[in-house]
Length: 497
Image 1 (cartoon, one colour):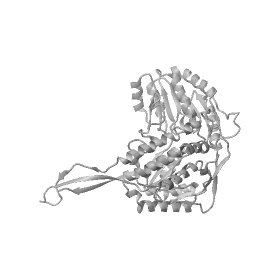
Image 2 (tube, one colour):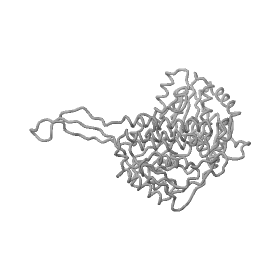
Image 3 (cartoon, one colour):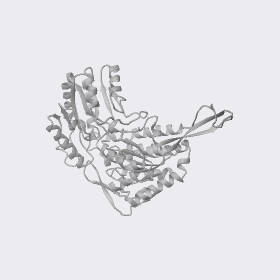
Image 4 (cartoon, helix red, strand yellow):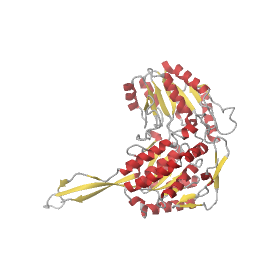
């Protein structure tokens, strides 16, 4: 692979490329081979200080927050154009760095977030101050005439944003921080996962090309010390995080003394209800597509299948037949639909959960091992369990691996109870021949998104909000109110007469 970006040994801070003072680097692996893709620069506290100072200056003194929404939207439209031109390179990087299968890398991983960026630009270009109708009232001074006045509501940026992203959808997740934070007028310090740093350093190159004011976007790598400092420093006004609920709770505790605003997307354990009148084959196909997508490394993937007992045997046999010859292999080859897990540690985690499943008495239907023909990389066979107890670890924990579980039920009320018996609430689905009943059940499920009979049917909608209930987080990405998470409202009242 000859991507020039993989030779990048500097961080993007204050509009300049800065080599870390320590000169430390961290090897970035190709998950499909285990080989080193490149050695990414490793930032420390010194670089964090520089990045926060640059972001603070850009917000407090620079032109970006003082530009109109339309002016910022025009700059971000240039970003969209540059990213579109570099899309083949971005897709190649996504395959190599994140291990995303070719088809996924050329669709949901990259094309879908570009739609989100375009939608965000359109939202920003239409934002205007809102002036309330004139109203009269009595003054505080006795005997004075009644007043006539009005109020204008202005939306302003929050300040300096810390954007912290996960490894599984690196381009999408980085862009989901860059888009709203910058369109709203904030300055951003973007810290990616150490597994996928080059997908974030890309945005430094783009910022240079479009002439983004210095300090508005900073890209910082680093270890736990840098992450802890980033979430506690007083220069940061808002933290936008995508990752596990365990890390999110730590960030909340670290941010609490400073009363920082938070936007959290913390993963899930999404349930799919298959009613007695559903098409079992279609539901099984959706289940297999979800549990195998990106080797199960997706926060909203459906991995808990709550199937009516009258259909359960047919559902399981259909899924088993599909998984028998499921194409698992190098993600650069388009014929393979499932690639590797990100690292050996994640594969070992999947193996632990398979053992948990066996120990709990669940029945292994398919998979449960490393593919014998793939000697390199971090591959694992898609694994399906039946006869699963909804209280078990494999039914309750977010595994982030290609493991699906089937749980039987006998009534709609039981299905809703089982679906809601989870600490998470990000995604969900219902298959039913009775669409009205399916919709009613969707309203009863405590989750941020519900796909009824397949939902949108393609890439996630650019116009729909995404976010969670319970430990899946709070705040919403995408959708018509996306930018509001990164804005504050100010009311300016004035007399008319």
